[in-house]
Image (cartoon, rainbow over all chains, first blue to last red):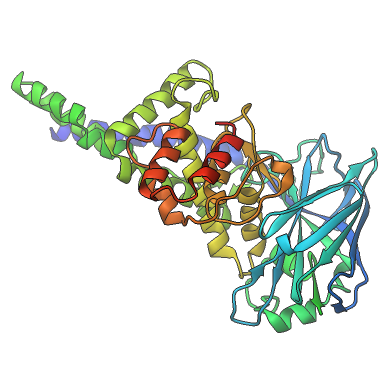
Length: 234
Length: 235
């Protein structure tokens, strides 16, 4: 019986080396280079207040050469390389310590260029036109409910994977130690009004903001501080 | 669940008994040792570019643990059939779930639908109002914007999702409103995640079985709207 157990243990150990260990060595040959891609959008007017029934205009007109966050280099990403989907979430902020209230289904939306769909409690999608070099869209959001309202915009790679997406169409030079680099797309984000005129101060007065917390990842900061637009609807 | 099925199913116990009576005690011991090496749940954390971040890892964990919760409710026999269907589909080259019209697809529609629903529900609850709000918002988008699609079991990347697993249907039972582009007719809003889960009993092998079970359990609550909802999911 003891011999049987030892044999079985050796078999398991051998299998784990064959499966796990082999994979480890192979992976070490290539160094992952993680990408975060940024795309610009503008929202006007960018004032901190608006009236019920007024329209907030979202415009996109960005090149398919997207800026990579860490290196600030541009890479051409066409839909056939990485298909992107674009969406948004709309919440009202009742105050710090209180749960945000989803209000997307109280906001009317119109599309002057591209398509838009609102109707979910918290979220909706918009679809940009791609003309071979630029992604373009113009959409109007018309809030119907007073309150501190925050719009968060998402740019997501639509590849069917939970994990970072290999960008094998991008050839990177070897790293400083001569190891081959392979590009992976960690995430992609919209940057509203250059990340500046988006009323982040209004946002941070009405909900817990994390920009000054320790150990915050850059992409988490991008989403909170640059992919978000906040306005008080009166 | 594999280890639990292997060690506790009636088939396994009968086999042990037969082998023991035949004097093959060593074989029984070997069988038990092998059974104990089977995993109940496996959750991978390695990816081609390193390891999963906590949001990604937690999503998989929520998904797989939701299967174990479902398993606890339906028992060995239900799950053994489910595993057998996975094996059968895989050997036949149809992928683990097969197509919507293949035998046993209803069991996948409700069980994988449940795991995908719970995964995104818990991601939304865990990361909403945190620095990882993007994960919460994306999870919400997946649930609110499922487009029923007979051609694939699930496609849940990007900002919307599609497929014949009914994760969006479970969400629609609890929320109000529906984006027009999904084509779903959602007039149901009176259920909770707990009452959604209660419907997943061992005699529920199809989406229509699920609808009937929920109708019985809830005393016909919004039963007409439920019928419209299920029909609009193309069942």
